[in-house]
Image 1 (tube, one colour):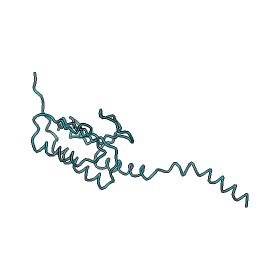
Image 2: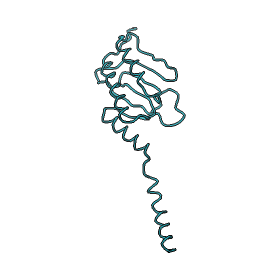
Image 3: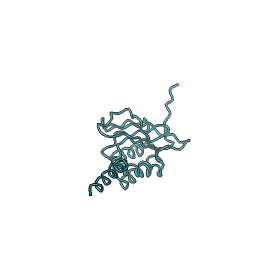
Length: 156
């Protein structure tokens, strides 16, 4: 009987590292979320957004690219300041669409930016797949609405 317990203990010690390497439920949820984001056309990156970093967890950039010939307008919203800076001369419909998306952002979203190439959401990935699909649909609709609406400053 003692030999059995020794063998069982050795097997447990040998398998412990393998068991601890298995991804947690949170890690599997995040992998599924990032895979779904890539399927929907997002590029997921870890880049500092220029806003305050969260105390716990990572802050990732989910980017949707504007079509090459259609640059987007400059937009910057941060949860920290609760202000949205937009390019001057934006249509009222476009401004309303931006504010509607901001209202629908999850609590862990820290910034939403738009530039010539991308519409980017900075957040901590705490949504489930169904909620993310709704968010992605809203971001994609806004991207299509804003594509090609970049205003050029003429100061020469």
